[in-house]
Length: 296
Image (cartoon, rainbow, N blue to C red; front, top):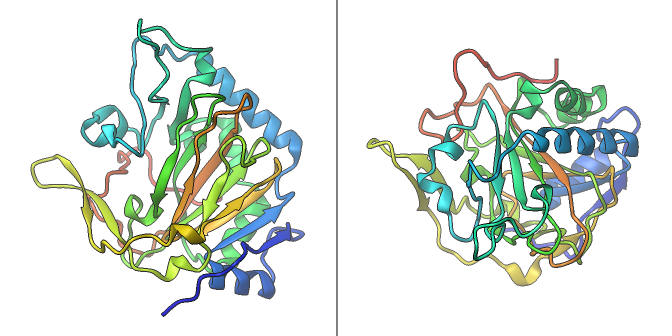
């Protein structure tokens, strides 16, 4: 049995990055932990500026690839599934109007950018591999950490889509499970612009689904456990820019749509322990010329 909690534990970022015993206890109990002021606001600004520079080189008319957690359109999309060692762009489902034109400026039509900016771009690399983050990861018990993916989430104004309840270990699976997510607020995340929601304590529920490649090369999301999520116990994780939210790979989480006039930029890293087996049928794969790296 497990106990659902009535609050998401939050602390000021620890000096040097290493979690205290009290913080580790909170994370073990809740499966999610908020650390305020972990990243300097100037570092958040630099990453936003670099992201927009990369967006400048993206032509949405030539690459109409949409990312949606509600329609799962990417299940048969090689552009998505071959992005583990690349930098690729994914539009919101409502990016285009009836005439085929973008509804608003292209930077306000993107869902996300992924999945290897941390290894391919020097600004993203510097943000992703600070001494503080390395110390934080080490304090969580990783002995051989590897940053398996990075995502820049735009959550644009007015058309930012909802993200349905899911567990990240569905998509980033190791044996034994070792995935932990690090979600950085680059702008203030509020209820109005679609902040994250978590179900603290529910990381002790079973893994409900697994996404993998079948022998015929197609991808499937297989249901392992069909017990409903206790979504009535979800709690919002409003966060100021510079906050990092750490969450277990089994932690159920979701976010609402952004119908406000403000974007909600965020950056996410997923870390696995390289001592664990990483199945060859996982969707996220890298070529031999880009081995998995930790924080060195």
